[in-house]
Image (cartoon, rainbow, N blue to C red; front, side, top):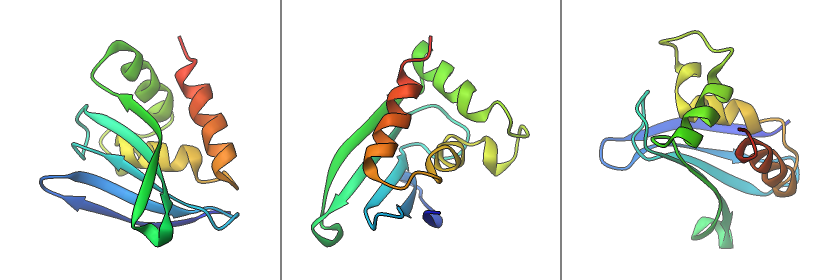
Length: 114
């Protein structure tokens, strides 16, 4: 099981969480607005000891497709709880991935929702 780091919030940059996958690869899940608001949800793969990253997934939660994705991620979460936030919901969605390849596959499945 992946090692999920703490959820960190920056008033200007939003909220993020680092995840170390079973493969040893590290990803960072970022929600640019934090909280329950829309905005952009993204996943980056950390490279070069965390000094560089590569964008793996990005979703604008303010557009209809993004709202469908957010609905799918939060469908079992209790409204008003941390699990109902975009960041926590997405971390819960990918926390069982063993590698970046699995994260890509799950992200692709999310984006194929209608």
